[in-house]
Length: 443
Ligand SMILES: Cc1ncc(COP(=O)(O)O)c(C=O)c1O
Image (cartoon, rainbow, N blue to C red; front, side):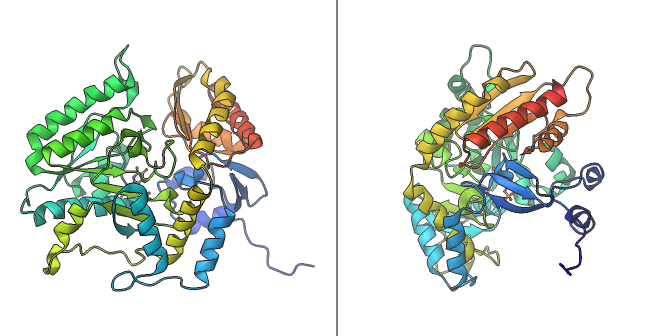
């Protein structure tokens, strides 16, 4: 007989002890958090044995599935040698190797590490303003961001974020940031294609930079998809023009690929579809395959050289205790191994086409608007039934869970950002579960 004490279920214990992120805790009174005990590929298993398809890659971090054997083995093997050493004054093989590989893949170098995505944003912002100061232009310390953009929750990153629900409460704590209109193609005029609309929106950026370049350090953009703002997608032309304008007006271009890097948009990095190179590239989430917190900001030789000096203050005196953690870097190297060992982008393109075919009945629903996809991200708006006041997102998420699919709609935007490992069974489950959830909620 098993004599171990019976543990109380996790969810009520969690609600007593854990303050869950991005959550009004009172709403959990009606719907406790899902207690997950294991993950395997695209699937998560709950405490009661129910399996859920992780259609959102656990907040967009997972690339190749939960428990991917190569990434797991790389972490185990690193754990047997060195779990951590500080990166100030010391270095180690996983961080050197990862930095060399990221440099070769992006044409950028001088990898400065953080932990979560927001730390990569903060590093890029501080580096940009500090660069201008070191170059004798201390007045260039303002930032311009794209409306509806999201760059993280820490105060610097939140300052360049334009999502009122997250930002407004903290507005008195945030520094001023200018906004330019989004190139989100859904806002195009009738008959105007995404590329023409991107060009038109770039005119507003040009007007802003023409007037404010002397006080502007950098433009920050989410290349191709503004994810947290509701999976707003745009044409690569906007990025191409943004690069041109930033160069023309002497303003840095920060590409925040924290959510869209590592194959999400169909290319290894989203900005590559515009044939450009940013001054700063922020990466996180998929960087470690969804296994361990890791973020990195990459930059140019020009930026690096502006800090290289005998005077300590001209250096970048920014740090986090776990900067460049060896375990996380080993996971990230394993992610790059997977990209090297197989043609992930081509496999994803074929997988995406299969998902498109299977999803046709959802795209055709009368309640579904603005069906869209870029790479391995699908999104659509769901119209609420007449008279319904409350947002449909939470009801769709709850219904999807009953059908074994983990979704996290943003307002009335439903999206899928699945791991790259869905098989036919998982695709069928994703479509059937989403369809059933929509029928129960708005059908
Ligand atoms: C584009 C973008 N930037 C920054 C962040 C912040 O990353 P983190 O939540 O890891 O701090 C996110 C998170 O979703 C993001 O999507």
